[in-house]
Every structure is written in C-alpha cells, then in structure tokens.
Length: 425
Image 1 (cartoon, rainbow, N blue to C red):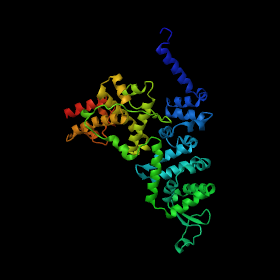
Image 2 (image 1 turned 180 degrees about the vertical axis):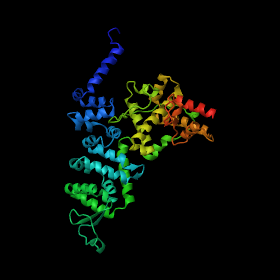
Image 3 (image 1 turned 45 degrees about the horizontal axis):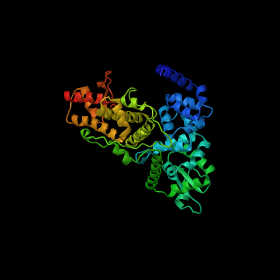
Image 4 (image 1 turned 30 degrees about the vertical axis):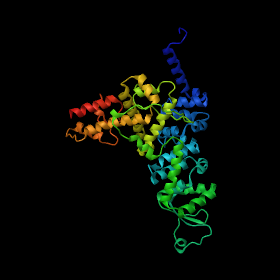
C-alpha cells in the first residue's frame, strides 16, 4: 500500500491532464474517443470552439451522437452555432428536424420555414447531401403551405389554370405560386436546388403538392419520425406520458431485478442537473455507472417527449433535466435517507421509471395537502399557486437566498420545507 500514490496527487495529475486536453493543441493530439470524452466535461462554448478548431472538425462533429450535437447547438443557439450545423451529418440534421418541426403530434409550419432557412444556410453541397435523408412526406409538408402548383406532364391546363397569374416555372411544365411573398425567395431557392440536382424528387414534390391531402401527409410523416426516434431511444407519446403515473408512496415496494443493456452508441446528457454533491450525482460519479447513465438518458427522453415543447426549447429542456434529477433524488432519499450504499444498490436494481414515479407521487402529495388552501398574502399565495402548476413547482422564497421565483423540486429537504409551510397555512 505504501507504493500507491496519494489520492490528492492522483486528482491533481488528472486535473492537469484535463486542462491540457482542453487546450486546442492538446485536444488535437487526442484520439477521437478521447476527444469526445473531453468535450463532455467542458462548457458548451468551449466544446464548440474545440470542435471548430480541430483539424478533423467534420469527423469529430459527426462522431457525436445525434442528441449530443443537438443539445450543444440548442445550448449555444442556432444562429451562433451555424458552423456546427454545417458540419453535421445528414442523420444528425434529420434528428434535429425531427425534434424541431413537431409539437407532440402536430407538424408546425412556422418552425418548418425557420429550419428550411437553416438548411439553405448550410450551403448547397450540404443540402444536396441531405435530400436523400428527408422523407418525401416531410418535404411535402414543408412546402404545401408555401406554394400552389398547377400544370404537369401530359396535362392540358384547364382554363382557370391557363389564365392564372403564376409566379414562376422552372421547366414550363409545372407552375408555382408562392402563398407568402415574404418567404418566396427562400422557398424558391430551396426548390431551385432540388430541381437542378434531383429532377425525380422535384417532380414528386410538384405532383404531391397538387394531389396529396394534408392530414394523410402529416400522419405518414409523424409515423416515419416516430420510428426514427424510437431507434434512438425516444418512446411513443403514450408510453412517455405513463411516466407521470401516480400512486401512494406508502405502498411502494422495491421490485429489483432490472436488466440493463448499454446502447450500441452511448448517449450522454449535456450536463448533470442539481447540486454537484446531491445524492444522485454522488452515485452517478462512481465507476461502472455507464449502463445506468444510458437508462437515465432514456428516462430524460421520455420526459422530453411527454412535455412536447421541451424537445426544442432550451429552457424547457433544462427544467426537464432538473425535474428528472430531483424526482429521482427525492425517491432515493425517501427510501434510504442519505444512506449512499443502500441508495447505490437501489439505483442498480430498480427501474428508474418507477423511482421517478415515486418522486413525482411524493411531490403530488403536497398538491393534495394544499387543496382548498388560499391566502391574500403575496408570498403565501405564490407558494400555493406554484403547487397548482403542471407539474408542481417549488417557490424559491423558501430557499436561503429568498428569490421570488419558481424552480423544480430538488430533494426531500424541499419537500419537507413545503410540508411545514402547508401545515402552518
């Protein structure tokens, strides 16, 4: 034992290696797998700078799992992260579009136009590379609210089409009118690139816009999207919503015996939520927790899908990360107090979904306790209103800094403070 280095020395050496790896020169010298590991330990802006300045920037960006690159771009902001979007692979871009263009079951035309612009900003080469990876149904949805189409191969134009004042034709076979003049330049540029590079796709789009029914298109496009997301660890909406099932915490019994399977491509959350020294974070910092991290990522994905808006809103995403972390911490503390070894055993053997539901049910117990309570006092009223949001929030005035705002529940200490407050009210 006397020959082993002291822990403080090991930590110091490890810290120095991390600092060197985070410099552009040190980072560039690392193998690809080590680069990705290093990136996961750094703030978003530094991650982006290291990727963009790396000699193999495209290879590095495309080696990141789709979800990680998407979260990085969202954290920085689409406009400021345009160079990352340009480096992305077609599969990564398709994932981002799957995230951005849907609000639960519904396709969002406004977002569609915004991301149509991002596709053009990536450049014609990137767009041509992307086209084979976009479903025809999705492209039709993106265009059918932007243009009307007349004409076609082997067709005689009816009188009303022949005399119509069409805006443009690329081939004198199909005639286009732009429905929104403000979007005409962007939409026209997009169709022009398709026309020059993939004539068959162009004709399919023209015929499709003439004849397809919007509801049928949306249903097909949603099903294709759902299949892609399922392959990446995102459940269907109905399954995701089951995450918020409630039960009596007193009736909870450990089941154990869960089986963990590591994903073929490990996926990591952008950052751990909650306090660094929280019970959950201490457990996740232990060695050999890779499979638990994969299960945690799936749990977060489920919460994101159930929320809907959080899939493409950075602030809403962060709230989801904090909520998942908080409910799991509450469940573990409820079951074990602060017994870290007992909590580690539960984390390894119990499905995280059940632990999340336990934490959620404990918080919902506060909502039940608050039923019928009212107050004319400003702070008391806000604290009560926080509990009646969906899901319940914690009033930050209970914290030592006394901030007048709301956040997610973090731990059992939060639960106990609110219980004591409700008892006084």
